[in-house]
Amino acid sequence: MAPEKLTYMANQIAAFFRTRPHEEAVAGVADHISKFWEPRMRIQLFEMLENPDSGFDPLVIEAGDRIRPVVKHG
Image 1: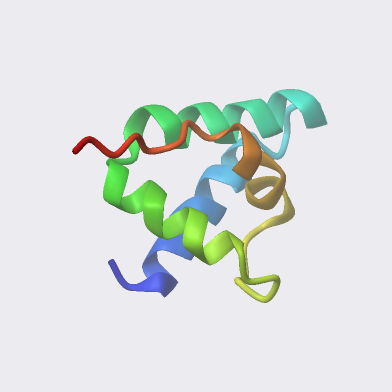
Image 2: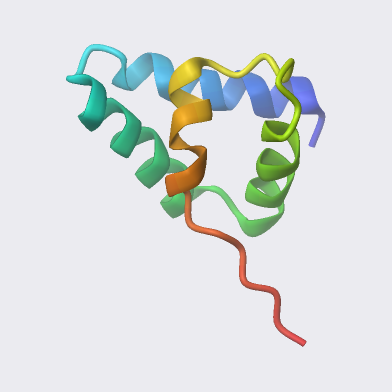
């Protein structure tokens, strides 16, 4: 997926949860991405989060450690 599209999608999720209390917002972002993003998207997200200039909303960055990791088999 184009990095710009992935950033846009993650930031849209953050915008949705922004009205909630901070802890609930971070948990909501992590939960949504963990449940609904396919493994390839999460792998790309984790790679992009390593770059401090990734353009992600601070809620996405904070949620990064709580997003379910991708388990590789084989």
